[in-house]
Amino acid sequence: MTQPLRQAWTHVVRTARRTTADGLVVGTSGNVSARVGDTVLVTPSGVPYDRLGPRDVVGVDLDGRQVLGTLAPTSELPMHLAVYRHTEDAEAIVHTHAVHATAVSTLVDELPAIHYMTAALGGPVRVAGYALYGTDELAENMLHALRGRSGCLLRNHGTVVHGATLDQAYDRTAQLEWMCQVWLAAASVPGRGPALLPPAELDRAAAKLSGYGQPK
Image 1 (cartoon, rainbow, N blue to C red):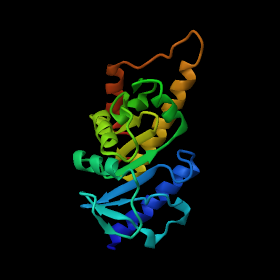
Image 2: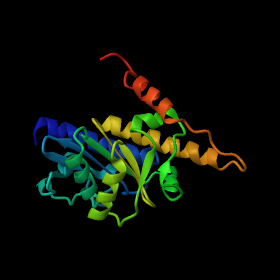
Image 3: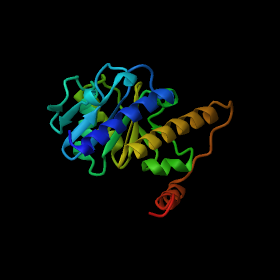
C-alpha cells in the first residue's frame, strides 16, 4: 500500500473502534469507509474492530471490485459506493446503529429541527424508506434521503453520515445521535410539543457554523 492508503486505513480502524467505544454500534454492526482517489477503504464483514490491523486492509474500486486485501468487505458496501459515486464532497462515511437515531427512524419521516446543529447536516434529517440491509434498494432509498444533506436516518436500521474527513463524518454522526436523543426526550413530555427552529434560523445557523472553529 501507498503511505496515504496506510494512513487512511489506520484512521478507518480507529474510527470504527470509536463507534463501538461510544455505544453507537454493538458487536460488528455498523461500518466505516474512506475514499483515497479511486480506492475505497472499508471495514470488513463480521470482524470485530479490535482484531483489525494493518494487514487486514480491505479496499475496493468505485465499481466494487476488490483491489486490496482478502477479507470480504462489509455487506453495506452498496451504500458506501452509492454515496461516493453521487456526492462530490464525500470522502468518508460512518454508518451506525445508534439507539436513539434508530428509535426516531421508526417514529417519523424526518427528524424535526430541534437544535441549530440541524444546519450542520444541511437541514431536517430525512428518514430513508426501509429496505433489506446490503441491498441496492436500500442504497437507492438512502440517496433520496441524502439529497441536500450530509446525513440521514435509515428506517428501522440506523444512520448514514458522510464528510470531507472521517473526523467530520464521525462528529456529524455523534451530533445526529444527540439530536435524536433530545427530540425523543422533548417529544415524550405529555401534553407538550417541542419548539422547533424555522428555516430562516437554520439558514442563519448554517452561515455562522461555516466559520466555526480556529482560523485556517
